[in-house]
Image 1 (spheres, rainbow, N blue to C red):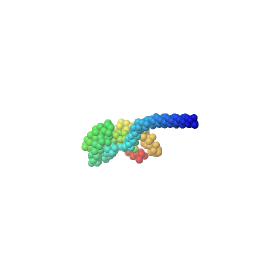
Image 2 (cartoon, rainbow, N blue to C red; image 1 turned 120 degrees about the vertical axis):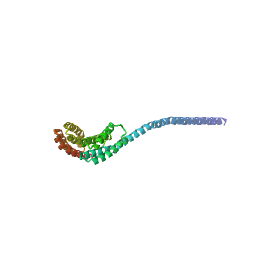
Image 3 (cartoon, rainbow, N blue to C red; image 1 turned 90 degrees about the horizontal axis):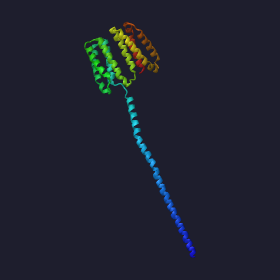
Length: 263
């Protein structure tokens, strides 16, 4: 009986030891698991940190893209620039018709439009300084009712307005406005009986037309392109003020048709 109790006690003790060992093993496994989880959590934190570090770059890129888009959307010719060109042409037409009352009124409007250029054009543009000098000369010409001088200076105003509009990428290419300017230059050259000016204008017109022609064809206006081709060839072939005189009005009319291609 005593031996049985002793064996039983040893068995119980051995079982207890097994349970203790098992408990310790489970505890060790649990502790290892917790440690492993803590260790594996660190990469997640790092990934979060990387994302946070990259986010400002993404935001900056998005902001820059938004600014670029705004800039493109804002690429419209300022009203002051458009008005300067329009009033310059108005004065030219008035002087050509010897309508000095109209010329004086439009000169007043031109000066007001020119005063608004500084607010609308943020970057310095040498054409603004040239415009100041031209306005001074135009003012004297109108006051003296000098037809040829007024036409010359007024047309120069339209050229400077065209130059000022170029950075804004107007929907109608600046070459169209330049051809309009050259058409008026032909009229001025005829009035001044200046064959050298007429020949120089014809050369400039051909160069400008070569630049514009692809854009006309891209709009599907091949008929207009061919028509202007012939007209430019006639201007190149002209040899006297009388020849240019017959062509000047046609040039101005056809430039109006070219402008319609882009509207």
